[in-house]
Length: 346
Ligand SMILES: Nc1nc2c(ncn2[C@@H]2O[C@H](COP(=O)(O)OP(=O)(O)OP(=O)(O)O)[C@@H](O)[C@H]2O)c(=O)[nH]1
Figure (cartoon, rainbow, N blue to C red):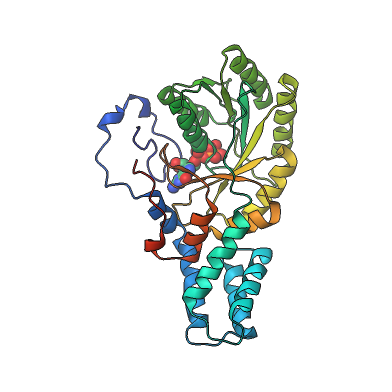
């Protein structure tokens, strides 16, 4: 399909991107499989855990002190109090007062993390009786909302669905341009207003337009906003309110896009965006970078919101359904030979 559209680290797509013939994209090193990118991205977390586990358990009997040390390691890796105590209990039950090898601890860890994540690892379902099925995509600045929208649009376009994109980040002309570039590439109409236009009004127009054009899916982008900025959160509330005026059932799905590198702050984002916008599911991006993936476990434990996808790169195919088992194994630093089949190279 298409080559990567965004340069690594660039906040915006190159303005000339639409002209660049996709087939002539410069030769790139063979792309790593998604498993390699996932484990690479989670290496900071998994190494901290693995190293900690090895230091604590090599040739030493499992006792209360060791369990406390393990607890510290897991809490420092952002796994959260609930999941950490489950893991500690499980490790304690397994081999209390006996020797336990680091590999056994890692295996227990992977099993327990998987148990926490399994209920929230849910595919993103579209109810085809709702036409258009309306998504509202929210999150803090730069978390990857627009990129995720493009990745989702690419996926549904490839399934032959008619997709409309709404450029709700009306504060930044560059953000609107970014979405238009994606729209052109993907064959999706983009509804945009003037710079500084009311985002709620745009949302209303976009629903109307998507209905008129018989679109299957509408993806509404929004401006990035910090969850502690009351006026911006009030604007988000208004967007939702106005969408409901256009169609009381919308938005059918509210996706919160979280940047995996932010750590603990993500918990507060889930809580506040959840309250204000009625978040129905999560996408966690940048798991290919120096991610602090442990936080996903804490979020799962604390909020129980579905986690639909993870972003493992900047290209349009770099979106993977979230699977509890793979994520748990990557976090626990299980060996590569235990890795699942790599997704096809893109
Ligand atoms: N490595 C990596 N980069 C990503 C991923 N998702 C998004 N990005 C990059 O993160 C940066 C910000 O992405 P955007 O999609 O513009 O973020 P946004 O949330 O729409 O930003 P605002 O509109 O400013 O709030 C861009 O450089 C993207 O290429 C991912 O999964 N992995």
